[in-house]
Image (tube, rainbow over all chains, first blue to last red; front, side, top):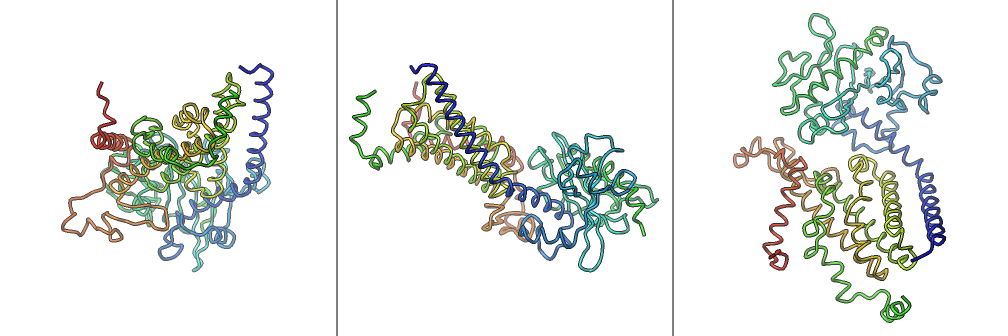
Amino acid sequence: MHNNRYVLIFVFIMTTIVALVLSFMSIGLKGTHDRNEAIFNKKAILSSIQDHLGEGVKAADMPDQEVLDIFTNQIEQIVVDINGNPISKEDVEALYKGGLAENIDMAKEKKKDPVDRMYPVFVYKTDSGEKFHIVSVRGNGLWDEIWGCVAIKDDFKTVVGAAFDHKGETPGLGAEIKDNPTFAKQFAGKSLYNPEGEFTSVFVRKGGAVNKTYEVDGISGATVTADGVSDMLYSGIQHYLSYFEKNKS
Amino acid sequence: MAETQVLEKKEPTFAFGKSERKLLTDPLDDNNPITIQVLGICSALAVTTLMFPSIIMAIAVVFVCAFSSLFTSILRNHIPKQVRMIVQLVIIAFLVTVVELSLKAINYPVYKQLSVFIGLIITNCIVMGRLEAFASANRPWRAFLDGIGNGLGYGVILIIVAFIREVFGKGTFLAGTPIEAKLIGPTGEYFINTAESSWFGWYTNNNLMVLPAAAMFIIGILIWIQRSRNPKLVDIS
């Protein structure tokens, strides 16, 4: 048996060494970590316009530099409020370091009252001069949060593409919103409005889409997640309507 | 204490004889941490949907197991007995954090995919079990080999389970890596196209395989095969 003094000194020295090594490592790698995280988020945004990035290109497999180039050359980042008015970089920076749309933490924004939220918009210019407005939405699935990006054409009616992700949906069922590329593919070409001109957003219909202009097929066995996607799209895109209205040409 | 230290010094430090080889090979089969000792089941059920994350997880556990055994063994005569387990836990937690920070820097998507399970290596019973049972009573070299062996024993089962689950659940092999192969599925890009093939038209991917329950069945079947093959393992009592 060692005496108490030995124990204390031993533990003190050991924890000091461990703490020092780990904090040096953490500080040393912080730059790489932040860069990786930013690229991961950017790829998620780009996967909503995957079909327009080039033949056979998958956003998730793109080289890092290419992703950064697209963001500097072809994407304009705007932050708007509920009325569609742009929020200045300084005001965003007060909450999120960096002050750009990509820095906004949607999980934090979701907890706020919709009136006070900041809404990120990524305007993507294609090589042919078309403009796509990519908006972020966030909602609830069956077990935990789900989120996604929806790209909308310049007419602010037609969906170009969508990409979803989730925190803890069931693999093979709810998780198919992310894992099964055919689910997200269905959103391309759908209209956010019904033929009467009423805002409907895109609806995920259990048992298969009835009205093909604004409905997509659900996933069997994942009704709650699919309903979550519908709700998320409806309430999420609704908040962007005044932004759409202001930018309609 | 003094006598045993004199005895230990007679052997070469990095011997690699029969007993050392046994340290490496035993956990792969006769004393496998998952199928025989039934340790580390939690992560084996959770991370084995795809092969690539399972391989990363296996490497992480081998690293943590080997080096925590090595450090514990080096310090074994200096660690105060009263706080033995806490010291071991600090060593494990230290190595796990090193793995986590490195993986986050090297491959962020896999880090996201494995999420909490890298952190949960700390609570993996295999690591702590080997420190208590072996490393705290053996010389560093032997402890290091034992750590590698047990990490590999865990990893082998993980990769076998992940292989079965990925092939039958998703129809792919090593998805997410450059050598990804699409084996069986309903579109043209798969090797066996079930939509057109007259032989495999009935086949669809088994959704159960994607759920953790499938891993439990597969591990159960592996235990069954292993015991029926090796009568030494059958509990006759």
